[in-house]
Length: 364
Image (cartoon, rainbow, N blue to C red; front, side, top):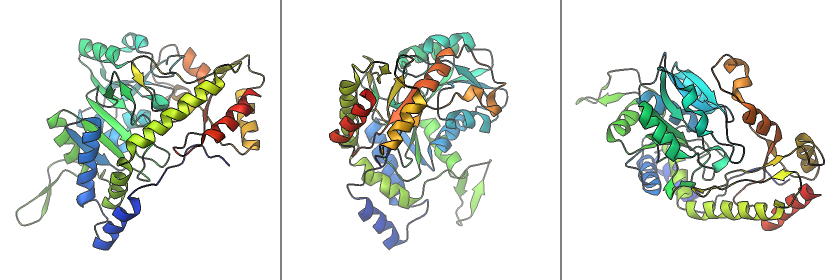
């Protein structure tokens, strides 16, 4: 089986994790927690980084840090993993869905303003499968309407928007280190921001709003959250981050090869990379158009028969039971590409021969 996307362990993971075990620093306090935050902040060029248990908790933490809650609305795309939408509900706010672009599959920024009301507080662009949203337009709209911008960069570590790391264009950026991401800690996430006040607030909220008194007792002035990553996982993150440039370059080379081998395949729409973007190609993806010889699901079935794992695009969230009553605009493109999209194998260690095999089957 050629898997969809598995991690690569090629550096100091065992060494750093073993040190945690040897010294008994395995919980949410330890040198690797601080080190991971510092080194990650350096990589994305952020002033503040707060490590979390997963990307979902990073997104929830971002919303809570900005004071988003009951009665507020957050604009988000429907063609996404459900995590950012769920976190909007976690804090008591309401998601408002906008359509996506047909070429990049990310939020259609030209559809944002028509959905803004007096209740709108945040725009939450999702850099789906690694391609950045057109952030210049997002930031212009946000400034015009006095809105916050939280970037969901959980699938886009290493991607860039106009030579700036994604997650660092908006007010707050959020990342994921799940097992299938470019770097992994098994489970984990990170919140980044250049706003010192928000950085301190996020760390305070993520650690149960704990203040240590002179006698060592804990004091809590408000409700807090246990979002901190254990030291043993942070150790893994530090090791993985040491190889991030190599991993991103490998992903990009895979994307280029896929594009080259599939560019003339009738009925296949390949992944895009706009002039403003550097796409990390977290998951290399295609659309199976109507003029292809078989259906999207038949392609998935045939790939599986040949030992190749693939996955359909995320289903539109606005069509799912918890969110059917939420406001949304025309979602024609979202519903179309969701029905046509496939994620192809995208592991860092994927070989050129494996990509050629996959593409030959699709061309056939």
